[in-house]
Image (cartoon, rainbow, N blue to C red; front, side):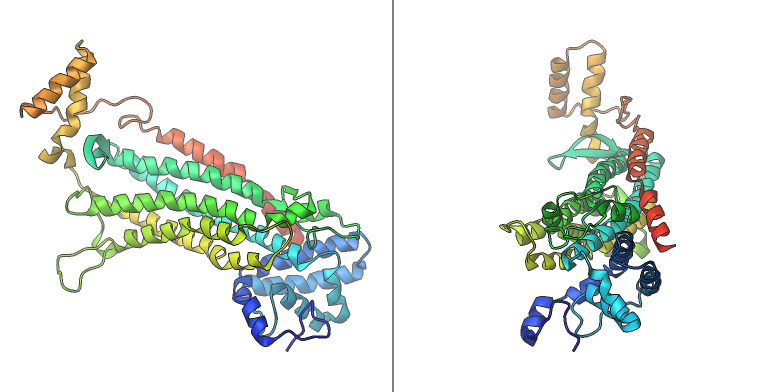
Amino acid sequence: MASKLWEKNVQVDKGVEDYTVGRDREMDLYLAPYDILGSLAHITMLESIGLLEKSELEVLAKELKSIYAEAVAGRFVIEPGIEDVHSQVELMLTRKLGDMGKKIHSGRSRNDQVLVDLKLFMRSEIEMVCHAVKKLFSTLIAQSDRYHNCLIPGYTHLQVAMPSSIGLWLGAYAESLADDLTVLLAAYKVVNRNPLGSAAGYGSSFPLDRDMTTRLLGFDSMNYNVVYAQMGRGKTEKTVANALAGIAATVSRLAYDACLYNSQNFGFIRLPDEFTTGSSIMPHKKNPDVFELTRAKCNRLQSLPGQITLILNNLPSGYFRDMQLIKEAFLPAFDELCSILNMVERMISQIIVVDGVANDERYKYMFSVEEVNRLTREGMPFRDAYKKVGLDIEAGRFEPVKEVHHTHAGSIGNLCNDRITDLFNDTVDEFGFERYHSAIDNLLA
């Protein structure tokens, strides 16, 4: 069995090792490429302050880039008995390069290694989520424009209220995603700060050039205070989890609407047969399982900030092993959210909108406000017009004019989708992902 980076003369109990390591090896596979990037930046900095020879840097960098290629290709493994990704990388270097491989740990701790790994991982995954949100957003806007005149009832208290449209409905979710992206941008700004050089949370007596590693890894700035850099563990994940939960909340609500509107009692939309499932005993059933599972998965994602909060609760400053458990719920969340977003985009692009819903007798009263407003425009005081229409409804005399004349910004006749799109695209541009890509490309060159 390989020794631990921290092990001296006493071997840890096997049961204790299994309990404390848990699923960390499995979770660390998410972090492998980023751990190597952090090491590349760190050794480049070590050479600049005289802790590595130039020739050593060249050899170490070449080998780290080779390991990085293995990790990106999905071939990196953490061997049995090896505690984590950091230990595995250092082991691979020492096997190949001998004592030179042991020098990469100078001036850092596994604490700031995992911090930088997580920051680099989150940064990349946020970009992936951003692209998936953008794809769904574009489909919602396109379908909103396509069906802007297709009237359906709007509801308050689940009672038929006023005219809406498929275009207004889908455009609402597009704008909701625009707000969600603003929150994700704020989380990204928290993520994109460099903790490397904080070591175990109290810095180092080596003259580490933290500005250099910040630049090499494409961070916007560093986490300046080394104690706070360590306190950011868990807090950063919770900040990002809140942003992911906001997106999940929007999509969950859309999924619920889709289930409702697809049901026979509403019948505003239909799903293509190949996007539904059947019943084992009811031959007529076409179940919206995709939207139902979407709703459940999104609701599960909304629990993520709470899980992280409960793990972090009552911890003082400094590092504690409690934080390790955050990985298990947090790291897979990005893949799950992107899977949801991609599937919902596919569903929304294929929905079949039922024409003529507004002509159904059940929805006649949704035009009552239109009649009140018509009478008001003709000079009747609003409260009198409201009373007249109400009495006509009670007496069974109300016959609606099934037209709407909504022209103000954001209404059925003026969806403002172009302005919503501008708002969304401005937020996307503010992320500036190309800046960190350029830095990483240079680091790997």
